[in-house]
Image (cartoon, rainbow, N blue to C red):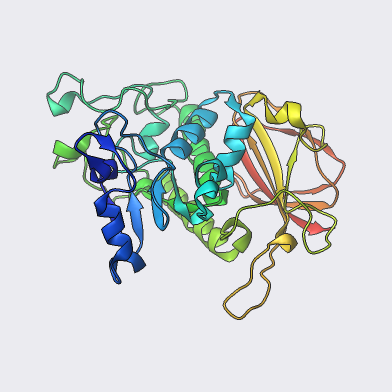
Length: 357
């Protein structure tokens, strides 16, 4: 397939963006090109170029709204509950109306443009002085958080904070509906020293350093395990959007959003701003079949994301829940009985699997 850089430029006819332009019509009529993966970077540098959610059927898009919302959430910003929920479920507000699937959303935290993952948790400001453009190039707003110190440090508390934040971000990425995109080098903590526009730097700023210390080796192993987990569970790789209702005569909805007190989120919650969100994905309620015509089923998972700094008391839903993904640097084992009220640490992404109904 192909990823088209600044793809909105392909839709411009004289001036305005037109998604019915000759370029798209020609590709969709071509017997070969219409069958390959077509991925748009859905913006360009001109007026009206930001076109996330507007590309034609069969096109996937780099989801810049996903990137910004998830970065802001883990920075600690209060995000509209409805907006955050949409990003976690494959952005149906952007794509479902065009008869697309969650696979239209290419979710990512970082790309070759901007900060690396390591720099996203290490710098509040861009540091592009080496580009010799008076630090005027590159994006000014990166929605980043340096954990209390700008740049590299040997402070063990700040390093631990950054390692936790990287894990939070990637757990969110790989449990969101849509296609996760991981920037090469993020799995080994590659840094560009705060440079978020390194296109002109063919030197140590943009090179990979393969001499991995213990911290980087542990993070690489974490990313490997996270990818294995994602591939093992089809509930995170759905080809259809969730419906928010009971399916197949089951007592549970395919997705249930929860308030901290354990009750289902209501209209007031849906319209509020939040830095805490929790939801259950019912693995037995996947409304899809595999290539053999068999209905797809999976485990049921509870995802808890606390992007704020304060602990939040949360009441677990019915069932017995086993912790399977967490951002902590230790080998943590935990089982929680439904109805238990537990404090969820600030800045923590937790995934529990239901082991007993």
